[in-house]
Each structure stands twice: as C-alpha cells, then as structure tokens.
Image (cartoon, rainbow, N blue to C red; front, side, top):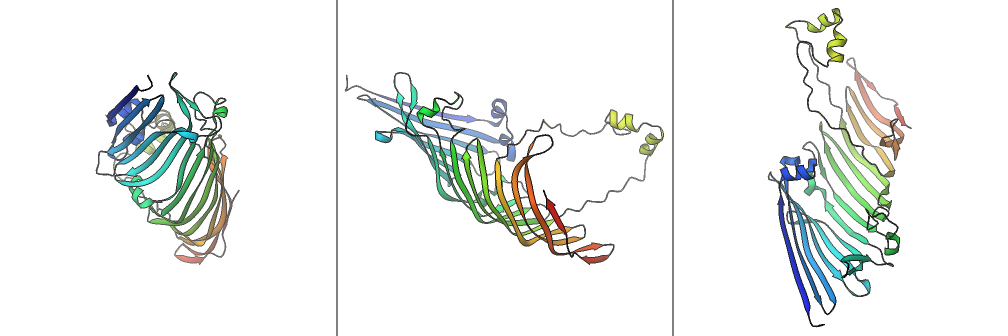
Length: 360
C-alpha cells in the first residue's frame, strides 16, 4: 500500500595497503614520501515512502603516509535534490589533516528510474562542477615538493565545469556518460607574489594572472606572468682528476683497437662490468594544454656563474608546440637582453655592454 516504506543503509570501510595498491593500480604516488596507504569509507542511506525515493550519504578517501607527514583526504556529502531542480548533488572538501584546502559542489540534474536502477539525465539542464573563488596557502603544501624546492604564496582560485544536457549526452560515447570530455571549462589562478626557492641557492618571485577556458579535454591557458625578482646561480662543474695509479687500461685499449668492441659494443668498462644503474621504463608523453601566456621580465633577474653576473630583461610568449619527433613541448618566442652586468675572464673583469637572446 501507499503507507508502506523501505529504508536501507550500507556502510563501507576499507584500508588498502601500499603493497596492494601497487599491485592493482601501480603508481609512484603510493611509494613517494616513504609510502602511503589509502583509507576508503562510505555510508549510503536509501529511503522510499509513498513512491518518493530519498538518497543521501557520505564518502571519504584518505591518504595516510607511513612517515610523520600530514594526511590528505577528500570528503563527499551527497544527496538527492527534489523539486524543479531535481538531481544528484554533492558537496566536496579537500583537506590536509583537519584544515580545509579546497571546497566545491557537484550537481547532476535528472532523476533515478526505480524500475531499471539507472540515472536519467535531465534533457534541459547540464551537469555542473563549481569551485567558488577561494584562497589556497601554498605553504601548507610545501611537503609535497622536492626537498630542494620551496614555494610560498596565496593562490586566488576559481573554476567551473559545465557539462552537457541529457539530449546532448545521448550522442556521447558510453565511456563518457557525463559528457565531461566536451564539457566547457572556465577558471582562473591569480597569485600576487609567488616566492620559489630553487636548488643551488637560486630563487624567483612571480606575479601570476592566468585564465583557463575551453573544452575540458583541450583547455586553453592564457594570461600574464611577471618576474618580480630572481637570482639563478649556474652550478659549477666539479673538476675530476684522472687516476695516477694502476694499469692504463684506457690507453692499452686504444693501442689494441679494442675501444669499440669493449665499450661501444659490449657496454663494459675496461677491466670490469659497467654498472648500468636503474633500468628506466619507457618515458610517457606529457600532454600540454594550449598556451597563450605572456612572460614579462622588467629587470632584477640576475644570472650568476662561470664568471658571469648579469641582469636580464625582456618579454617572452609561451605557446604549445612540437619537437622534431612530434612530442608536445612549450615553445618560447621573444627577446631577452642584458640590462647590465660583468664577465670575469682570465683574471679580468669586463663590463657587458650588450647581449641579446632571441627565441623564435
């Protein structure tokens, strides 16, 4: 009868260890930083009374480092939206320990077909993923960077992803039921001052004002980057002395025409087996989005090393291009010149009157 109802609750609580994760989904993220485990949990509530279904629940994923590092997690609070704006909704929070880093919301208009158990997307409203304008402190993410790199700054961030309506999704492949690949993306990233500490006691400060828009599968990043200050120290190459004791195997090999056979062909060192080092897997091609970014260097960018100490200025335009093998790469066009500087050579110090580098 209409008075009858149904209430169901399902709970999941899983702990996936690093060894298991590397077996089922190999990725360096599980082993980085000393290794990580993954905790998954969910509670789903389903109720149906008088033909009106109600669906809600919570889900979470938590990366647990083996070392004494912060835990990263994603929490979802999902529910059914009723009325004229019916659909599936979810509020999400990305957090580090108990500190919120990023918040957003997801809306998928439509309704559940109780007979087939399928979700029927709305024909006149599209899926939306919305990250409202918010600020992210990069200092809290410093432990994710390599040990020799540090970054500080306050990131002003916002992003919207607008999918397809139900009618449009019917023409999408089955592997993309939400039509996300052809969804429209629009967002921005602004940083008033990004301070980055680099290896070899180098550093740089940037002002960033960039936008991203276009299809989610092929976004376009545009905007401006201004170099506020910078100091790059060119690392010195340590001098290596040849050994003065032992047999001169190198010269004996040259005299006996064994150079090619013992080094080029067999890959062995003279007098022993060469340490090949770790065997690297085949390099994966990195996908680079379409770029239209202007880089301004008004000065105060110092390059030091090998007797050179100069201040650079110029303007560059960063776009996406390809190398001779067809691999995607960042292409720089523009001019960089020396505003002032010195060159030390043969115990003499010379003033650099002019030096220009053209990228084309």
